[in-house]
Length: 326
Image (cartoon, rainbow, N blue to C red; front, side, top):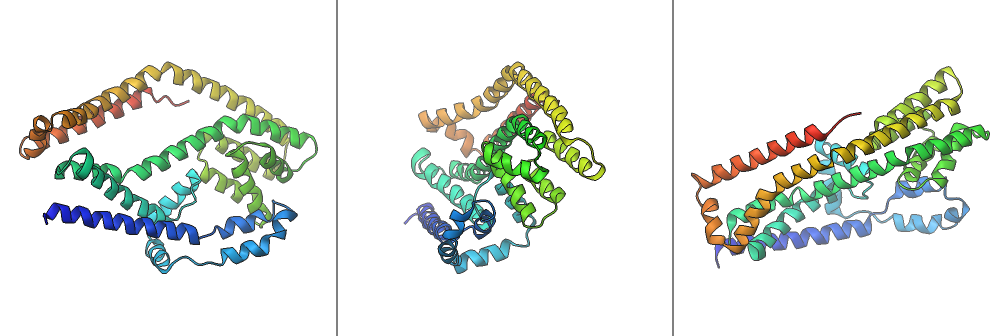
């Protein structure tokens, strides 16, 4: 049996084992913290079924999951991954996220070796390198989309907050009303703040946790204003109304700038992606023609490295030009 085939079969076995492990962990682990926090906000209907849910939540993760979590507990990258998953609102542990990286790596490598580029070891390695970044790209996309939606909803949230304060609500009661009326992801994040305060966490720390999950300059301005008002006093409703007007104008200006710079951003995407797409197309149509570049280590590989480096630098420069801060 050829050596590369043995490696591929071993990779397939590893992928299957990791898939089974991830499915087992996901089926056994229940989010106990979220359930307990939910009892403070869901009402009596949740409390009726609390005992049954607790019995289900008593299932412990497997020994493999506990061992992996223990190994990753003290690592610095594990804390960063945990924060990224929280900002993306993905119910995954660090060990599951690590397993997804490994599965994606071997999956892309197997796909390239058997289907896209049969028997090409170089392209298999390249595909595996791309695959390891797929989970990160997905998490980054989810985080960016969630933050964008939250920032777009901030003016409406402030409007609800101002109206609630003027009707006689306290700050916490106003936040609780927002958590019921606002759409996601705003309602979900504000609900977490209310739950933390109800569990005894100070208001400024709960709002700081919100800013950590949603790193937005507009939200930072709002939280700073709320904290200052709690210390020195003042009319919070008027302050938030002024901030709401400022944020609306900033969002409007950001939209206009995004429209004006759309051509430059699309140009950067096309210039950066066209050589790669063309190389893949030629590799599929005429493998012998493009294979010379990949097989020649003295000339072909340096040319590929220089080309990818120049493409990356050019794309980064174009994106930096069109990225206008307000």
